[in-house]
Length: 197
Image (cartoon, rainbow, N blue to C red; front, side, top):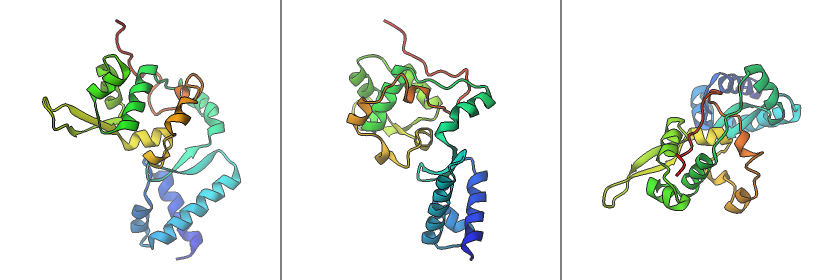
């Protein structure tokens, strides 16, 4: 197969998919060697990067997906007339604990945060940022939680290995950085804070 044709097919499939597509799956679909598909995807990603346009081909959640270039997020927000989703500090703390310490129980999260986190965990579950992995083999068999593919997609991560180190995370300005990420929720959605004591 001609590399130009292959890149065109891959580009079309990634474009129409609503989830990141893995190189293995794409290789199956185009009946090509995985290494050749991976190479073509890398070339496409470089072409979009060199073009410096409004979209980029990004490797996220173990697959490939077209994404808006970061510098154009505000224009896209104006088009969609939606407010950016904002994480409450409680939600961000709970999500960080789960991401870095998974698998983790609600009790573990509450111990580290020092407050009840049931409402925040329920909302993170509802937003598909975390999932139930099973039950811990201890008395009471509490549920254990971990992050989801959607978590990786929302934060633009290829895998959990791409999470910033705890030192890098502590240097992020939460009021201007992560708190204003454009997430795929409606403008009316909010991650609940726990009730004040």
